Amino acid sequence: MLSVAQPPCDTGVIRGAPDTPGCASHAKRWVLAATILGSSIASIEASVINVALPAIQQGLDASVGEMQWIASVYTLFLAALTLVAGSAGDRYGRRPVFSLGLAILGAASAAAGCVANGTQLVVARAMQGVGAALLVPNSLALLSAAFPKTERGRAIGTWSAATALTGAGGPILGGLLVDAMSWRAAFILIVPLAFVTLIVGLARVPEVRIGRQRPEIDWWGAVLATAGFAALVFGIISLANGASALVAVVSGLALLLTFLWHEARAASPMMPPRLFRSATFLGANVLTLLLYFALAGAFFILPFNLVRVQGYSATATGAAYLPFALLLGGLSHWAGSLADRFGPRAPLVAGSLVTATGFLLLALPGAGGSYWTTFFPAMVAIGLGMAITVAPLTSTVMAAVDERDVGMASGVNNTVARVAALLAVAIVGFVALEVFGRTFSERLATLDLSPAVHRAVAAQSWNLGDVAVPASATPAERGAIEDAVGRAFVTAFRWVAVLAALLAAAGALAAALSVEAVPARAPAGVGAAVVICGHLELVLDATPRTQGCEECLRIGERWVHLRLCLSCGHVGCCDSSRHRHATAHFWTTAHPIVRSLEPGETWRWCYVDETAV
Image (cartoon, rainbow, N blue to C red):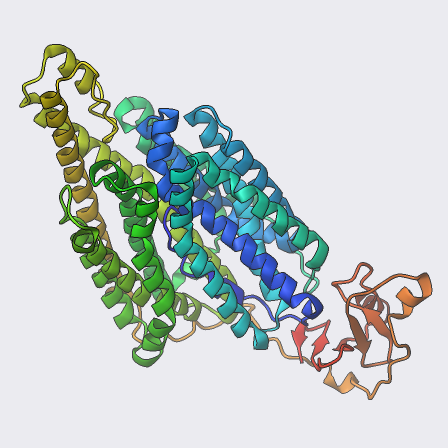
């Protein structure tokens, strides 16, 4: 996402995953390290672009349209493919899909650091988005599979703290690389990180398969969503081109409507329509859409303001985001306790309104002035407002649907946040470009410039502040042109900030009207059943027949975790092992319940009911 804010429901995805028998317990630290590194890589690629955009535009002589695509195409594929990539991990294995995502992201980052023009960088960023879409959901799935529900709290806390630090430090690190080396270094940095994470994943992270079900993959849904959003964004970015842009917008909307039609009829939809029957769930997602649209739109334009108008370095631009990121990461737990005490609706409304106030504060600064009196108060207000909002938003989404749909609902909410960021870059970029172009043209008409200088500058009126003053301009003409550029850009940024404030306030209204003060979990749908083990009577006081996996000892293989059959005493290796002899024993004998045979572990697992007992 084009900001330093993570999607709201990442922790919900982890908490909502099915319980596991914990067979990756021998590798929990490695799994936690690999998932933190994987999630951090995706976070860095989403946030580092914030501060690198002005340098990229200057270095590649990219148009505003190309800059919008560079900023948004990563999010396009991440948003459209995340849910289907999660299903692919469940079907084909989470570790292989996770590793494939890392490999694609690393290769695409290397390509992004070597591009020669804006078009090539758009393609490289698209491949980064594909890699991130494979990486992110399967990183969360590996974490949830390694830790039973009783142990996930501490693991989630460690993971959340690490990713929050990454989100806070990503823009500063990107700024340092841009200032000290080049914007290309911000992409090259990902390559060694991805390589190290890939080695850890392949060498130390086990492949854990939970249960027998292998979900069908909604390929048509993924194709329709990707094509629809791509056409819609292309049309919005190209609106100045007239008829062709309108055709693209209409085509995009038609494809998205087809996607909704398909989801209502698909056997295994990536976005089940039943989730939106809950008014609270619908309202929470409307709030997410509006709030993250506002955030991504304002943060897309902000770096250009800081660099081109305020004269900030790339490092200082990255540091400008720090109050926001620290407040968001540091106060989320406190905000969650507020929601527990007062219910989610009040924090959602109050947090959105505080965020809207922060966006209004962003609209106040002109050109110049100290950071502490101009942008710092706005960043504090936005960070505080988002901190108050995000934790209750996660709990609201999880409580608004049936227990069986918590993981899916959290994934849908994350996708909505990414779609909001995608649309924000296209729409806000168009608004800013239009306002800047018209304002600058009006100011340019009042300046006393030579005809040649006037023509050269007027041709750049639609470059969103990237105006090169001709060498033939006199010092007085140069000063007048630079002043006109700064004032026009400030006007455009104020429009964007006010628009963001209105959207955040609209999100508060949506929450006030739709979110229950204390939402009750939705009733189970037709066919939903509470999983209760009915095979406890088959448990015997079984004695292990061997001190290791019987089949592995016979063929000379190794195992990573052992299970004891509580019906006959058979000892077999678990699903993290190569041959999965314990599961093979179940299929042969139908003895349903096993117990861990590792020191310090007492859990039991029923194959038939697929639940911990």
